[in-house]
Length: 500
Image (cartoon, rainbow, N blue to C red; front, side, top):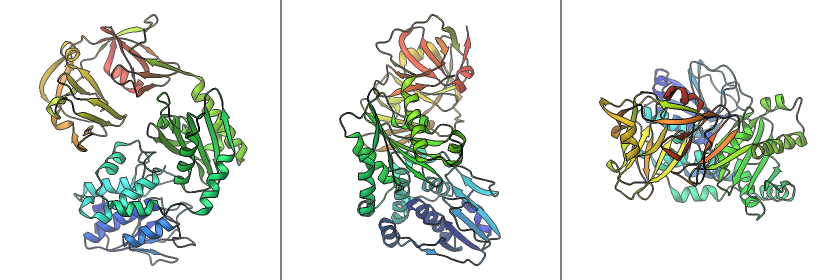
């Protein structure tokens, strides 16, 4: 779906969910802004019993001049666009309309109309709207108020960016030219005395695991940012390396996760806790997620009481720490007994000579769907682009003996084109225009075995961030370098390797 698909309608209403949050206000305003710029008659509304009362949101509406109205009734428009929600859900007043469109980032809860754009893998609806605007050739930075709204929507819906994992969310975070003074004012109008009481009560009642050095605490229903504040405070305790703070809401369980040890990525822990019952993600140190109540009830039959929910979360935490192998590739001696020899298939791949983009010595961050990879540019560094768009570093000597260069142009077919960011300059550059094509010479030989447990590999390239291997993935080591140990995802392995 494109925003330009709406232009055939004359009367349009953009609707947020009831009791809108900053992301709903921002993303709704983004759609309104586009339609108004196209000369359309458009109204921006939300329903429900109460008008906006939260101090930071009142300030946001006032300072950014958001033209939003609280509506009890609505004359049926030709098109109703629900933003940050889905038409017919319990959290959005149902107004009549000739046609309905949906723009959202939550899990799909029911049938969607033909006009819909739902990207459940994104952290905020603001990111969805920013991408829709970009597709129409509109730069959100052309209007500072719009950029500020979208930035703040993403900030609040991802718990101060701690739950960001998708590169499109990171792009909005890094690229938006926003009003810093306004963002500071919004953020400092976020905590009420009641929320301060909630934080204190949560910190006084917790579950602690002495061996694994984690803590779990429940907070009363509150703004997700308050959960983040509580977990930040809990992590400052000297005996706590990881923590989980949660709040039980009518539609699910909101969680905030923190870690201060490199052996536990908060983003990965959040994903593990929510697997099968919701979604989670974020950063190395800070993350969060949501367990959906309808899915949780399948794990805990009936209407789960609070003690059963805590027991479920503690059990997930225990499971995470119980069955895990940690490998530090530089010191690890791989036992190849029981491993099978493979060679790389001759499939076209992309490669980029890194010093053609940035000067030698520059510190760069390679942004991909799998996460951010930090490396320093040197003359022998090459960046490989795999068949699914996965990106990984390579050494020139290994490249020359393992691949043949091709003259054919490189064609990227992945979901997200990898981007390189100069850490010092803050400059983003797409890898694709610099990419050339290569194919395996047949000399890339590895030993590999399918995993039946979870493994974390700290590669020789990066001793601070691990590669996670899950059951069904493959643990591999190059034949010509016993310390070049890494994980290959199951969906990629058989497409890229064959038995020798």
